[in-house]
Amino acid sequence: MMLNCFEASRLLSEAQERPLILRERVTLGIHLSWCSGCRNFRRHMHALRTISRGYGQRRDTDDERVGKR
Image (cartoon, rainbow, N blue to C red; front, side, top):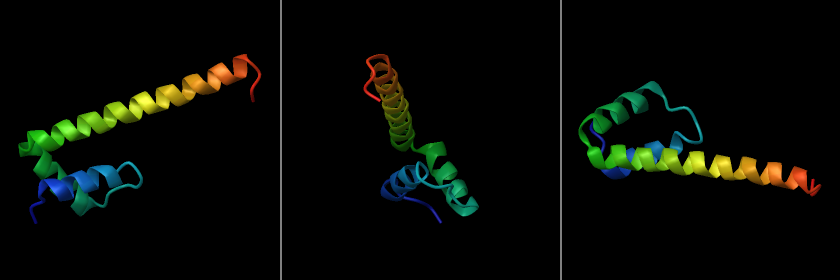
């Protein structure tokens, strides 16, 4: 089964919340091997997640410094 970009982006999003089953990983990998738009979407999702985590950690550290916790 070939994925379209909508299905691939849905799986990329779902992969943030749960492990993908083998079939999902394989079909997503095939799609990503030829679709630069979805590879770019995956990079952006990863960057946003990294930035969000960093922001959350910084807020926790800042709160501890001023005794807000």
